[in-house]
Amino acid sequence: MKITEQIKQPIIKEMELFEKKFYESMSSKVALLNRITYYIVNRKGKQMRPMFVFLTAKMVSEGFVNERTYRGASVIELIHTATLVHDDVVDDSNRRRGFFSINALWKNKIAVLVGDFLLSKGLLLSIDNNDFDLLKIISVAVREMSEGELLQIEKARRLDITEDIYYEIIRQKTATLIAACCSLGACSVLPENQEVVEKMRKFGELIGMAFQIKDDLFDYTDEAIGKPTGIDIKEQKMTLPLIYVLNNCTSKEKSWLINSIKNHNKDKKRVKEVIAFVKNNNGLDYAEQKMIQYQQEALQLLNNFPTSAYKDALILMVNYVIERKK
Image (cartoon, rainbow, N blue to C red; front, top):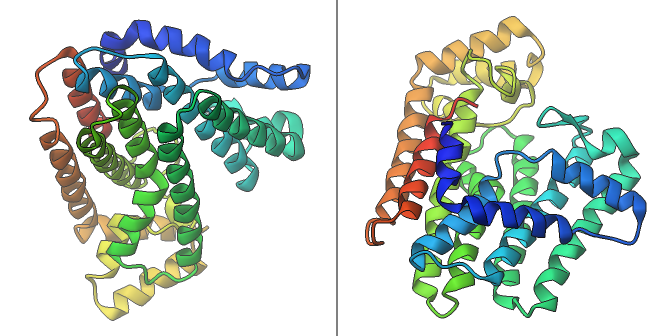
């Protein structure tokens, strides 16, 4: 059994019902929209976000979920899907998880409108059911994700980014969404217990940080994964292995590195040299240590919850995040 299937095992019924509810939550009177949303539902990925929502809800409440949990999972998926559809337009990307993107099939104008539609559907699903506490969690996440993306764009032009700014970017860009899933799961079943909600938010944030660092490390591996080696360097993205090496090498090496990334990022040989330099100067080891640190902190937050299939699945999920091959 694949590890993702194993993680899903304790919430298999919930996930099946969620898929139905998620599809219903996108319905419209416009046939074109229904065709597009049907396409979106059928090209789903690993579904890690709803899994985090249900596993967290069931762990903190000893196996209990309610309608709010389903709505929360649907809202986060609606809003997340909206941001992905818009991202593909912004990045002029024709593919998403091996499928054609919405903008590739239906053009940019329709893709932007579909993203707006999904966003409003998500907001209304919460508002119509008075889930204002859940809506607040999600709205904060969307604000942070946008700020993180813009902070990255602002800093990418200057390659003197510090480790602290890097952590702030990945916290907002990646970790915020997983944090929202976990706090949402807890809040859907224990709205009065803000201490547990906050604890689960922190848990999700730490996993998100580890997840992104793992992604950074993929840029330096030769294994066949979703993205080709060196793509971050080609796109002048500042990742943790690179930042560490830039801040810990001689000024001569530093100017060679910056020049390589700025002016020679299309030169395959030069990109390979940069990758080798980062590897030889402990960039990968350092990033890996940081990733494990975040993972361990996340696991510690689960210590006080009673043993259950849901807790075991969350532990598996945390380990999967840093051991995954793509």
